[in-house]
Amino acid sequence: MNNIDIANGIVFQKMAISKESFDDRLICQKKIYLLQSLGTDLGYTYNWYVHGPYSPSLTNYVYNNLEVLSSNDFSEYSLSSSAKNNIDIVNSLSEDKRADFVLASWYELLASLLYIFNNKRSWKIGEGDNALLGVLIKQKPQYNEEQCTYALNILRKKGFI
Image: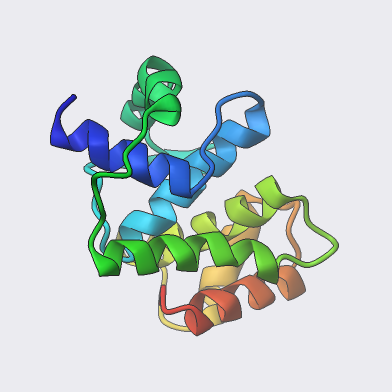
């Protein structure tokens, strides 16, 4: 097992990554995107897809390696304190979920907002929250302005933006 596998194994265990259901796989994609945006780079690149930021290489890696990584004992290895802190921040986002979301849709909204924010130039979005929220709602009409504003404020409070 190489260093990348060990790092992924530790991260996946600490983030309770699963591939059992569609929602589990969606949460995996969004959590890893959010984690990487904080500076813990696992090497996955993302593009925009129906459910927001998506990494085909992460999907392949999880499908091919999750059973082995989730059952391994990585106790002799450790992550940097900044990586541990970033994992805690991403995991803590579930505590900010409101009752009008299921966990998968909450992480989808957060990651989608952040992805569009981080790619404002290529999305041709001007400054200001209204432009950002307008683009997000156009892409994802299942969310309303009040939900998006709440999510944007959480991203700011937790240091993503």
